[in-house]
Length: 100
Image (tube, rainbow, N blue to C red; front, top):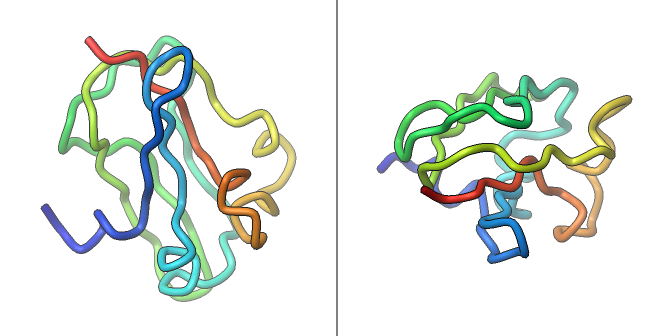
């Protein structure tokens, strides 16, 4: 796995695994301006590209840590990406994946 692994956290939630951005990831990437996220119902495979983020310092593709189907996308990211740039790490999540 690449160094990207330290950029995200995973947590068990009701509908699978929640994938979010770590503080270390925020520090490395800088302010996130845009994120290209999968949609609910999309199939994702472990190790394949899950999403892309555009930030001050870099454009990064983030691989999925799990395989399954996207069950939810963070609604806070619909209008802006402030949730990914704040100090509340729990709010800085991208998607929930229902594992196969």
